[in-house]
Amino acid sequence: MLDPVFLDLLERDPAIALGEYALDPALVSEFSRLDWSRVRGFAGMAAKVQNNGLWQHFFYTRTLLANFKLDNRLFVAYRRQHLENRKEGLSRDAQTDRFLQFLRTYIHSLSDNYPGLSAVIQHEHWAWEIAKSLSCQPSKSNGPPARNARPSDHTLMNAAITINGVIRVGEFKHDPLQIVAMVDHGHFDPKALVETSIWRCYWGDPASGELRILESDANSATVLNAVNGCQCAKDILRSTTESNSIQAKLFLRQAFKIGLVSYVTKQNRTRGSHAGRLR
Amino acid sequence: MSYKENRGASAQIGIAYSSYVPSFVSKHPDTVDYIELPFEVLHFQNDSAAAILDSKPIILHCASLSMAGSLPPAWEITKSVQHWIHETKTPWLGEHLAYITAARPTVGQDNLEPLSSLYDTGYSVGPPMNTETLEYVLHSVQRCEDSFGVPILLENSPVYFTPPGSTMTQVEFVNEICACSSARLLLDLAHFYITSRVLKFNPLREVLRFPLERVDEIHISGVDFQDESHWDDHTRPAPDVVFDLLATVLAHCRPRAVTLEYNWSVRFPEDLLLGEIARARQVLAATCLPST
Image 1 (cartoon, rainbow over the protein chains, first blue to last red):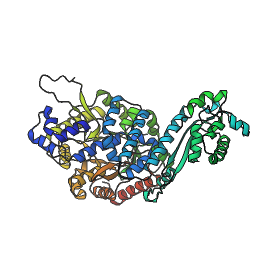
Image 2 (cartoon, each protein chain N blue to C red; image 1 turned 90 degrees about the vertical axis):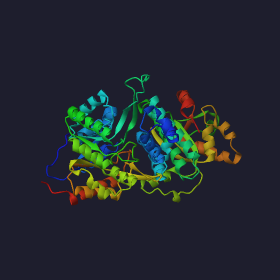
Image 3 (cartoon, chains in turn cyan, red; image 1 turned 180 degrees about the vertical axis):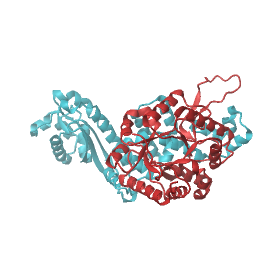
């Protein structure tokens, strides 16, 4: 009754589905009178409870799904994948990856608008990815990556630069931090959310071993996305418009100052080439 | 630390284990009397939960024994439950009146399924309530009594739909079990309320038909409403009707423990939890039968 494939068959044709069990016809008839939405709902709820462990890093996503009364339906749809995961014996991280992939597709497929939901999923997804990355970094006793002194204009423009640690940069339609604050205060109100364009940079700072969430904009996101450990600032700024170029230069200076980027050195060349996968 | 009762005093109050519970207990050490700990947490991830064993008395709860199933639990599970009963010094073992495994059908002589092949739902499912299931339950109760050395408390599952093959209501089924065995009961009031919404009966009246004299523990948790149905939900506080049910039940019986089950999330607002515990204590103080 909890297997979605069998449930489909049972709903369509109880006589065939139950054929191998040699049941009394009266009992088969009882199956045909079942309220299938409740049976499916129960199967979904079972999947939901069995996935309680997934939410450790996605508390706010779960809160919003429950607030929008979407969680049961979501897990009714997810049950088939969930059973496959169980069969494969996936690790928790692999299960989380699969679930997030499913969740994004599911939310995208909904016709109704659920303000803030996509923003919170993105926020927690990036925070989770960065926490995982930080936990794999060498311990602080090995020393954080070298931070640069304030660069001269010439150095800034001509040395190849790299990201220190891991970042994710992107645009949100709603401010995830506002939603987090609302949930923490126990009153998430989707009507109070204003749709707007907010850019944020999520940075796993290897020096502190912590996630830092920085305000950003489309221009600085373009700059950060171009920082790949090979290009120098001059090349990066060439890809921006003239009016944005001054701001981009200021942004790069600021990024140097807080340690978000540094020059490529022998020490960080290897790290820089794979640590800062960008979006 | 072992569970101790104050004889003659009202029921003790505990909370079900979740990852937020150790820090809650260390911050508010006198707020609850015990922690209810799932056997499965100890069995599968005992490192993370072991610390709680020293901080508060433990009541062990289980969802692995398939009490209403046609097959006994695996030998390793029985051995592990025995081990954790001993380690936790639990006064009893709570288990669902449900099944999680069932035998695959044997079809004629051509059945090639290996004997060990079984359905494993991975989740407690309410059984058809009839005389055949009654026999399974009675065997399971006897097996547990023989194996574990502590009483087994059967917990009513929520009835989301009447399982085909049922010839009794849940209350009738539980009464039959009690008439034929010495089983004790764990009355989950949220489950009972959900069942009342599905089957459309008055929970405050019907709960008095439950064999309340057998109830040793009560569960309290939240209830959600989605897609035109009520669902068990341990992430939210209990609705008022669950506390009304608690008051009704306490006017007719004296359970030994009341457990708040807010354990499906890694967080539960601290103020809210303190409020719920205080509310349960108030109901207990106001309605508990005098000691005899």
